[in-house]
Picture 1 (cartoon, one colour):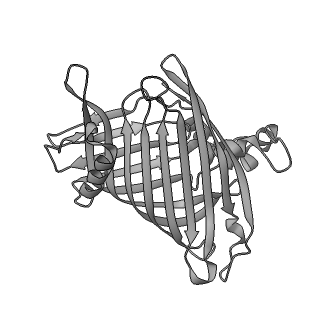
Picture 2 (cartoon, rainbow, N blue to C red; picture 1 turned 90 degrees about the vertical axis):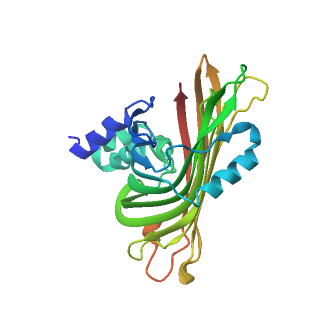
Length: 303
């Protein structure tokens, strides 16, 4: 019999990615949004103190755009509270105990399970974060020389916390806090342009997992047609332990993706590796040096 939590997590995991539900209020930008998805589902409440935001022009050049956005993030005027769940990763972590027969169905070899490959690359089942920074709508001229919104971006500080971690196909009780500075953005055209860069530090409760630096870089451009076609997804994450007696690389995730068009829909696959230290092998003195390499496979559908 499935446990209630197991069943609930799998129900969330089956929700299709879709246009977010959202509500806005006030003259200054503020509101609520919820975005369900298989890999990541989140809800956000946000409020800005700037009723007349600055004008960001795409034609000014990407380098100048990112530089200005990063600089504005040092003068925050937006506060956002976000709760995030990673449904598929959480659901797969419940399979070995909740439904071992279902987990064994996709056991390809003694060391490789397709369920684990679909869920690889996620560190925690859920998190809560507070963002304090700046948000901007990025504009460009259309063929009639009318300003239209083509992308949005944000930069600032993010404080994230959680009470569990995912390791070894198990959910472990492990409280943690992470402080990061980030710059991120998302395009509104069919190419689904996205970029996200974060650098920060993560504190762990107890001695089982060492504290360390975190770095994440993500970019996506699926503009498959037009004058400047592109077709790539790059996801890189590095985690480095900084404690004197446990200094070293904790995790490296590298994934690449491609897509093809079916009408206005994008169908594709992200594949890579997640090279990670076995958290259960860490002691209060030093780690054993044991590492695990997980294959990562994530099919996706965008419309």
